[in-house]
Image (cartoon, rainbow, N blue to C red):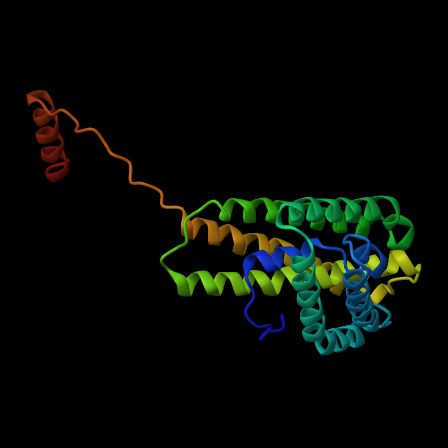
Length: 245
């Protein structure tokens, strides 16, 4: 996993992994010609970065190129999220993220098997399902009080950020294959599957972040009555332990 992606809030992370990164689809999600054009440009940059890795033929070349482009990909995705946050009203953001995930699901279900086989398509669908669960947990976090352990919270958020955007990079590799009808070469299947597993790690980190905020009260146990019979039984058991014969 690359490090040093920089600080970003949990809310921003959810936008990065939930919003479309394809130029036309992303631009159509907002209104206003200037905003649409800017989003289209950023999405084209994202597509180019993903394409550099996704079109490699060997796992070694894919890994090397991915390491080179991922920091730029992260920055571009963050720019896309920031711009969408400016031009899309807060009340419409939840609907936008849900629609984007639904469109991703439809693509993997309808186009995935023909593009790269049913196995990768099913794994993509499971990954998107996991992102939906992550979005639900993020909404839950929004209803909870901040944790007093700020350092631990920041660490969890950054681990979540790394795995969440790492996962989205590999989803975008498959999305590009579906859109351009260019194959995923056999040697790339294993590293892409491994990249999709990052969604499970992202889920685990956001789950820990919730646990950090939720205080489970200690159960209050009612006092147990103790009578002469209980005392006699206890004495007999102690004698048995001290003199088993």
